[in-house]
Length: 552
Image (tube, rainbow, N blue to C red; front, side, top):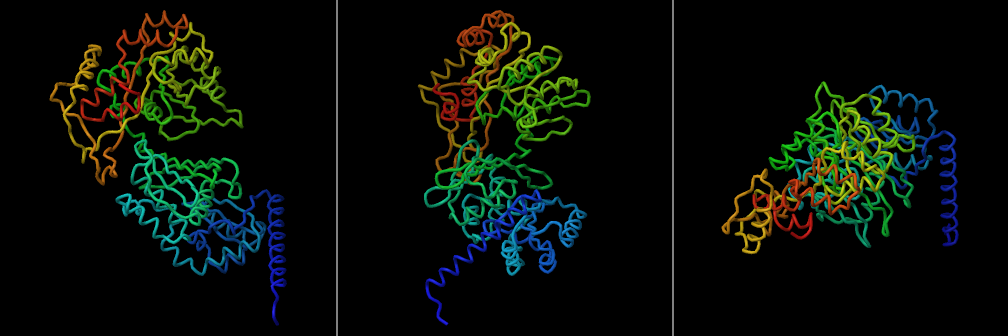
């Protein structure tokens, strides 16, 4: 019997209608049962996750394990009240698994079960447990990472996701950026504050990768036109590393940024942050005070959190109670009570801080001062026997005073509560493996000589002569610095402390320029000057310092 084109077309249309009807029934059932609905035709199925339960049992129970991350399983079910389904779920819980259920149609399950045919082969490559440690050892260079990504089949989404994460950890990236363009998708890592191109891949890989990342992060897979935020955890050598995920809609598809919250990033002590010996002495003295406020200022990504966490760790002793309120908690510190802002539940910075004060802490960390209410509670806490740490967005240290007054803090109570304001930026260090030297130019020599002459007596000035050599990044770089010429970062700082003269000035609500002039007379070293000292010491370059603070 010959089938005409119109009959074939009609047949496909009916098939499509049946499929839509079945998916609608599954969606309605999901709403009634309170479970999220999923269409597995748009979601990649993790092969290793699938074979956690053998095919025969999975078919009998009408379920499929579609994603596995350590002890977390995401399971697609047709009927969660099915006795065999309930039995398998109980067995998995007894084994220590955490379970997230999704309601799907029979067609979706059939699609998932088809993967059993290739699951054993794929499972050799795809590691649902995200064994990043082994992958990290295999990656040595950007080129090696690029080759691994480009040689994997598009169907092995789990393996691709793991390689991206392993590469990020291998190269000490702070963020992984996946950005759709007109005809391809760009992969970039932010390393030492600078975005580095890694690779390009197809939209076929991207679409599967997007679904995989959304599943891992607990985000809605079928939502594409609004921003979503989530997180998941990976394990590296017994260390848990949280990945914070941000997805926003773009012109060519959803843009993904994964922030790597590696505890190793905040394991540095105060002495490793980049404070000069004299500034370190000031910080130590202020941390010994029983009350008052220490503010850290600077833009996003300037290292404020790392600095304040270093302070907390120095003070984290059995006899001291420390409580934080953060948005969100980025790194967990043993021995410290950390709380997180949850605005939808009424736990804001202001409300949380008000509750924290009643807990009788010795030290309080407020993630950020954003409004008048939070600022006033923090100031009063500093006045009533607590040592308060917080951050504020200003360009320099003296700018914190007019900013607080502008927020609504009364000028007459600021001097009594504020102990120290720190402004900071992060600059890249010249690679120790391939860095070169060049003789200082006459123009720079004169400029640096003038700047050093204006420093207060407490500063140990580096040796400077017309024969001084400065560090210079190698043009081609090396494998250790990924051909950039720079490896690692260090802070440049500006410390502003309260003095009797400054107290008298602040109560008059002065402009920032007057505060700046008085702070300079009192011995404040600017970030630019601190940067110049580090240039002369051979740590960094003039270009890096000027990128951070402007022309010198």
